[in-house]
Length: 328
Ligand SMILES: NC(=O)c1ccc[n+]([C@@H]2O[C@H](COP(=O)([O-])OP(=O)(O)OC[C@H]3O[C@@H](n4cnc5c(N)ncnc54)[C@H](OP(=O)(O)O)[C@@H]3O)[C@@H](O)[C@H]2O)c1
Image (cartoon, rainbow, N blue to C red; front, top):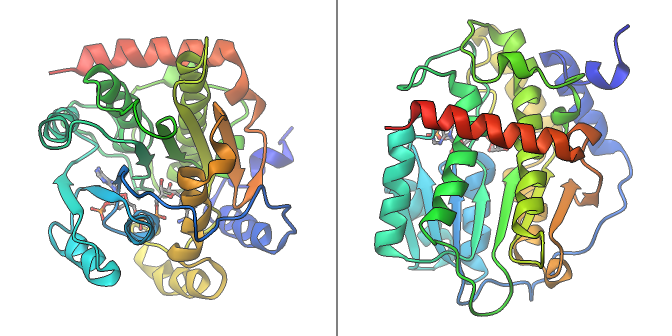
């Protein structure tokens, strides 16, 4: 029997329709982003900051006084210059990274450590929906790597290299941009974890949800591990809702004009979609929280599969083993 929940984002049409309907539903806000919620004296790293949500977040974080690190695959230095122009901030720094390549992630962490030492807030945002499977330089599947495994590698390396600041006001915060599609998979397919398989656009949309489930489970498990005894680092995840971004760039050419029209008419602008991200990163309301999950501005429980500690433990161990096998 097909579960209704699992059908919601199972193909391109359902995913788009569900996204639009979600925007029209009433949501009780978890809080309010205030003008006084600022980042003065803080260093905020945003990845995937060349486009869509990541770029809008970089602009808003800069406006609110942060030293901004934009970790990007493209748009260097143009996108950083644009953030400077729009905000009047001179404290914008760009670093190249390709999250499909483990060596590039190692270089990024070395660059950050060498030039900044410490960061206060990390926003893991980069993601894609490819039109078909592609192999990374290490021979694994690109969307699995970019949308999930690279975050596991990146965050763990930042901790290993002592890149988070524990002095000053507040704890470090890590924010993962996930998606409500993480509720779609019926269960974890552990046998397929990290195994390269060929697929096309429809399967890509289904797998997007699978990898967002891995990401959300990782976020829950990371918080569990970091905050076992006392709060050391807040870990937040969210679904920003449907955004008029470049996420559909690989959709079949024939559908692109229609998709663009739907995005413009119904989806949120990246700057509006950025509000819950900025709230999670800046608001004092969340100061003592080890974990939180927002859908738009509403607090929600992540899917029960993501909350299950056995799944978190298993995912962590399997990710560690896989990373060992592909590490340079
Ligand atoms: N759009 C939506 O409706 C929606 C809904 C829920 C969640 N999200 C999530 O929101 C996040 C941002 O997506 P978006 O909608 O803003 O899409 P977007 O406009 O396509 O931006 C995606 C960003 O990720 C970067 N990226 C992709 N592959 C990369 C790689 N291998 N290495 C480094 N960076 C890479 C892109 O860099 P380039 O510019 O160089 O390609 C770009 O900066 C994603 O995690 C997405 O899953 C989006």
